[in-house]
Image (cartoon, rainbow, N blue to C red; front, side, top):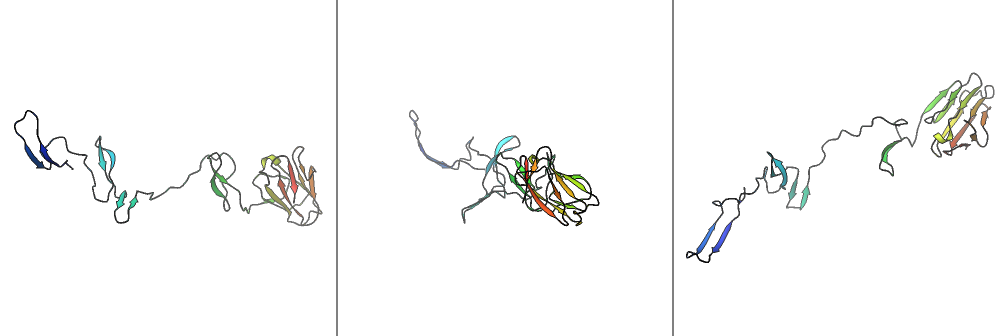
Length: 210
């Protein structure tokens, strides 16, 4: 608790008596200041509500060092991480993915990066946006139907491979949807043993072999 320390002299017009005084003010009223809890020379006080009244408090982690003029404030001691729920679309990827913020301030998880996903195909099938490598082992001629190029990101690519080495016997037809094309054609037929093609989308309406 602190007091105002008073010293000096007083005089007053109309008063015969005059003189000097000194003291620590302990006998005066209304000079008591806010109580400071956890007071120490190195601790910085701050206002908070104590028992319903505004008061001063201090914290061990909120200190100031006179020795090196360093201010220390309480920091995070633990974290539960970020929990993602109700994902709107897509899937949370693994290695090669990263967490970022887009230009609108939205928190996003991207599946960009290296992916080692392989999908084995043995009969007619439809591609999905998450497919990266189609390993085809056919026992009869089959058709791989592509979804719209507009469903892919611009430049997104995938590989189609005849793993059984019998595409010359069982042709593999890669077919687009609607009026879309692969190198200007509505479909591409793989008909050489162990043949493979790499395909990418323009993100709108076309696929290209590279």
